[in-house]
Image 1 (tube, rainbow, N blue to C red):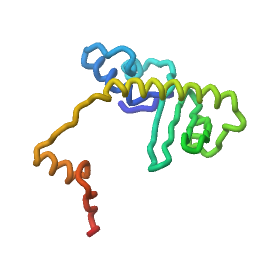
Image 2: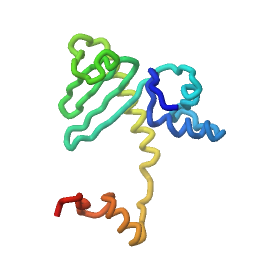
Image 3: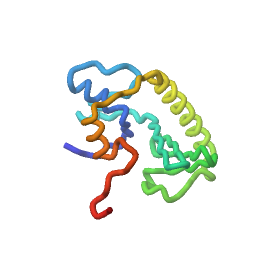
Image 4: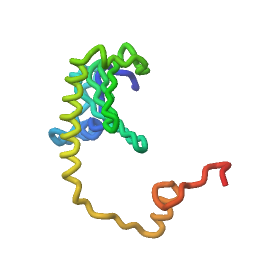
Length: 155
């Protein structure tokens, strides 16, 4: 049944979880199975990396335990939140906790470097080609083509 857990879970953990539930062995080093959580056990908290591209202002963050560090690389700024006490991230604690900012900034650098290394494994992918019917379907859904699909009520 759906429920909240205190442990941070990540999207990268989903494949390992599904593989274990299917009776298969997850690949080592890529996520971790959340099956113990599903069975009511606790798991140790692990850092979670997130990236958000907002036009010309990308953001990166790392969450670990109660802390969440958000970095805007273009501006060189960071924000720090205690997400357990402040889930809406209203009170930036970066100036009051420089040691936690430094620790989480180092963790963010480590995770970002690891993600780039992993992404480099797939840099030699080949271009996909689609049939005209698939291209048309993708365009109608807004995933291809040069025009955005019309929204209801727009002309």
